[in-house]
Image 1: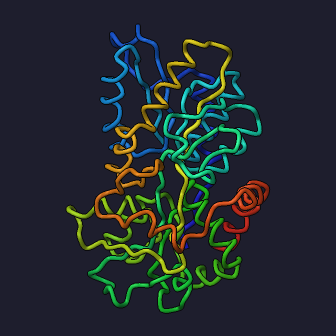
Image 2: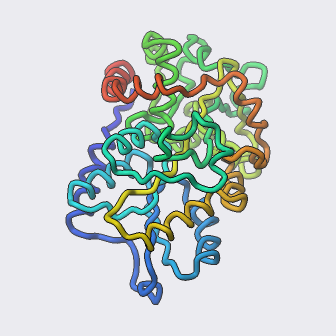
Image 3: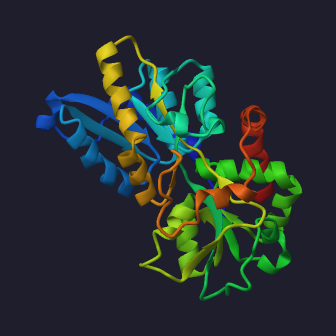
Length: 344
């Protein structure tokens, strides 16, 4: 079994260095005279490449800056900046909902109801409007059809613990990826820790993020993977060998959350940031999420190309609840530690 470093602590060390030394990955251009809006996000780079020019066209007076990294690294950078005395980010978009709950409790988020947020289901919003889900990544099972036939492919998450799948399955690490942490939390709640002990006996690999799972699928190192649907839909043309299925025991619905960072009173700046947030929840912003193969959070928007309708996903998926969120927040480090002891 490969060992995985705790990337949160590594990310925190790196982010602390950046926060205290003022390192910024931007060049000096004529845009520097414009008002900057910083968006820290775990959205993939192609999603940023899609939305950035549209935002710049909609808001020509704004110089948009993006910090892109995994959810855990985004959290580490924000935490480091908070320790340094000032959070640079204006808008946060990432997939670790539990971290946003913590940020809300610390009073670091601004209460705001974006346009169309009334069309987002209540259990995907903070009750005091401190964050709203922007899109839904969905964790599914994928397989390389050259190594595993459709008939043979595992039909549920539970089935992955069967000995027939020894040396064949991988996922990302909950220490490195917010979506993988959420998946572990849901599966531990559903099946208990014996499930992960059975996975470990099968030489289950849990390493890196979702892109690592895709690489192992393509190379057949691990021809079955627990991975985000969006990663597989991106391969429809370039690598049609990689297929997906919706687990019979329910896909794990992720919550790609958007929040506005609460800053010292600056009404003009706050209004600008709110307008940018509104755009992301507009039909144009929501369809940008769909083009990146995530489900839009606003009801009535089209599903990603090649994906089942979201209503189908909801049928078997375990629902989010305030109780689950509270329990997972309380047990967050214990969940990571238990997983590490069992799987690593």
